[in-house]
Image 1 (tube, one colour):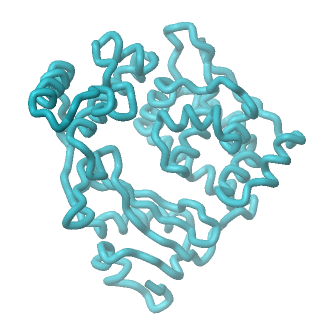
Image 2 (cartoon, rainbow, N blue to C red; image 1 turned 60 degrees about the vertical axis):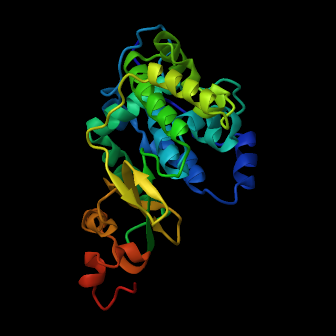
Length: 320
């Protein structure tokens, strides 16, 4: 089944107006609700439709525009794939934007979301989605091309950015592998885990699911044996290892986000290997700002970015 064009309502219902009145922060939800029909016009929806795949298991098709909106909100809120699905049922702000207010069923399936995002990035339409959103923001007056007060910071991405128990780190790796398989098959994660005999990694904590007395050496060895039986090989040839501080190691990649301090919007994002210097990303971010015709007037950064080109070659007008 092919997805159809999404035709959400433009006029606010009474319930929607009540939700909007209670929203004091996270104004992107307000902007997307009011401008979604403009962002996802027929032409852009047809572009997104080229990324969709036929459902092989008879599930109702999901409009690519809804998946794209969920992807935007996920990046804005910094939540996991599982949390996205939960938010579409539990958070009225998400429901407001996705046109499923008070729905008790998630409008999006986990595998479909993961698969769509992968195809979006592969086709380099993630940048197109961000640029179109910013373009509409400028036209609507929500934010625009002006002297920018910005803050830049990095955070771990994909890898184990926090100091976690080894068992749970392995569990996260297994879960990611199965999520990729689930996305390719358009299955639920639980279905893939059951087929692979790896149901124990479906919970939030592998260590909790193993349910062992971790003070007993014998039980720890039993748990390790069970994990190794499940885990035949998990390998990422591009995995990198770096540090945020002497005590905090980062495995994988780092996300660098430039926030507009006045509107709260994200104006640019960069990704580097975890062992790459933070300052190495700033020229790419600067190019994105030039493309948006934005001039930096004030920049708040942590010391890791001090060697960036912004600091080395900054103009007198830029306050760092």
